[in-house]
Length: 200
Image 1 (cartoon, rainbow, N blue to C red):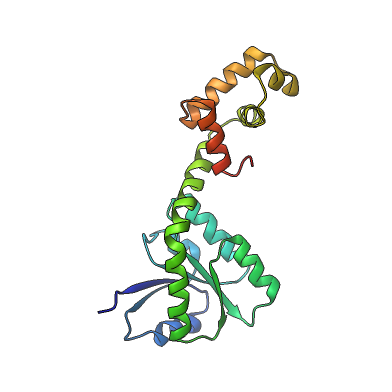
Image 2 (image 1 turned 135 degrees about the horizontal axis):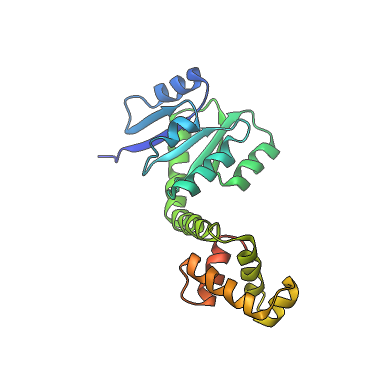
């Protein structure tokens, strides 16, 4: 017996939502339709594939929401006759696949297979990135500047020269930075900053 698969569908057009739900009716695929992301954000699912109609900033906003809730789901975007640039932008934002509407059950099953493949590899990376970003967001502007100096391999004296503050002040900011980030040592703080894409 085939395992039941869930699609979390986000589309402002109720006709498309109904058509997509209808095309997989009676199969092992379950569709949970949502009109917009704010409705979805109120009860974020723990698993499934996000199927998002690509309109405006919906795809990047869905990716941002996943980072905020700390639960990554593979996202597949779709639209009618999408242009190459539109597809590229969605993939760069984080979509794992892009479909041309209208599509049928076979296309949906293929998209679910692609999503399944990417789920395990990406979810770990995305969740770690989201957690790292939330830690870095706790820092003041000056603490971030000190972190950037530490990541560049600078001593307290050189960071102080760069920021026009004393080495002792750098030391205080450095201690506060480690404390706020929950890092035991400087190398851990640098790793968190790299995961948060603050430094490369």
